[in-house]
Each structure stands twice: as C-alpha cells, then as structure tokens.
Image (cartoon, rainbow, N blue to C red; front, top):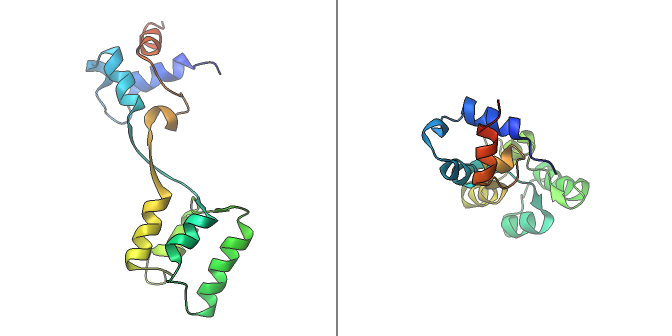
Length: 136
C-alpha cells in the first residue's frame, strides 16, 4: 500500500486536533500519530455479549426478543457500532441494561486507536514525516 504523503502533510499542516505538530520533531510527530489516544467503537462478538449479559438477561419479553434478534441477525458480531443499538442497550430511561452490565458493555465496545490508524496511514515513521514535510 502506497503511503499518501500529501495526506500526512495535510494532517501535520492543518493539525485539526491541535496536537502541536509544527513545534515537534519528525520523531515526535510520528510517535504522537502512532499513540493510541483516539476513541473508537468496536462491534462485540456473540461470546463477548453473552459473557457480559449472562445473569442479567432481560426479564420482559420485548427486551429479551431484542437481544435474541441482535444475536440472530448479526452473523457473528453484535452491531454496537450503530448508535441506535448502543442507546437501546445502555443509554437513557428505556435502556435494557443499567449499572455494572451497562458499564461492562460500554467498556467492551470502546477501543483506543492511534490517529495514524484512524486516518488509515498505517504505522508512521519519522522518515515518512520528513518526506511529507519536504513536499512542495
């Protein structure tokens, strides 16, 4: 996969997250871009989902049917990347789960990624930063 030096240059020059790239060395920029500080949402596997909710299976039919539908329709992963699914499971007055179960679900689907991964740069090296900065 070819590295998009212009996209890296645009990230450095624009610095949309105000990381202070202009005052950093090439190594500092690459280290920062490769550090996992960005939040992302992950789908849960059936095993993760069932492990978290075991013992807390919803008692009412509608919520139990919703959880069964998630398990049946998802083909291996619970679609927790979808905001409406996350809200139904853990947010608001109509949420299916609360307390420790909600916290465990939220912890399981939240992951940390680097800015480089978020922007699909892959691992960024100091030499790549130098090349991007040298573009006209």
